[in-house]
Image 1 (cartoon, rainbow, N blue to C red):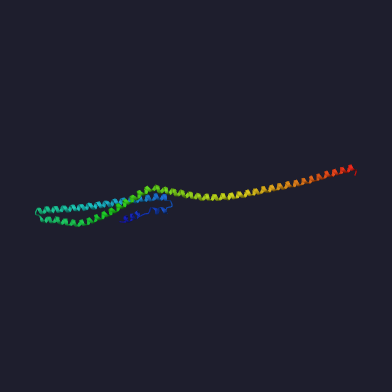
Image 2: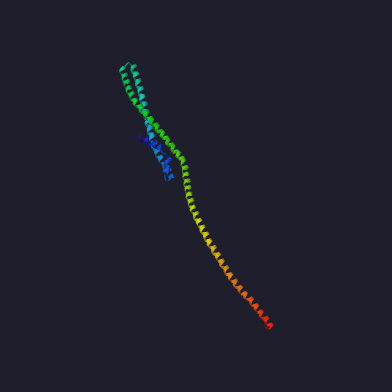
Length: 227
């Protein structure tokens, strides 16, 4: 019975392994659930069919037992009526039914085993579906958290690059400020040098002014003395 092997594989399927291989775990969860529900429909139909076979086998076995009991009663009546030949016919029929019953009992036993296995498979798959449905939203929430964390990590990496760029900009600003400070210092030095020149030139003329006064006084003194 191929379906038995088929659904044993289904029961042994590993959901986590499927999710690990999935590019989109959220879609994979829904797809896996749809697959299970489709498989469950097949298992349910097959289980119903095998259970029907079990009931049919049981009915045939019960009918055979009832017919054997009926042949026994007819044989008793024939004996009571003093008709042994007819009693033997009923007992012969009962013997034929007894052989048939052996086969019917074997069929019923096999049908019971198959029905029990399919019912177990049916219940297991139904439980798996119910469990996955209850976990579906939780699994999807975990997927969302993982995706959000991934985005945050990617943004963090981008912020690190931005920080590096800002550091480079700060270094450039320091360099520009240094150049500006050097230019201002040079300007101050130039102004200082220019001021020193003017002061020296002024002192020169001050000195000349001082010497002229002395000469004028000397000339006046000589004039008074008649020299």
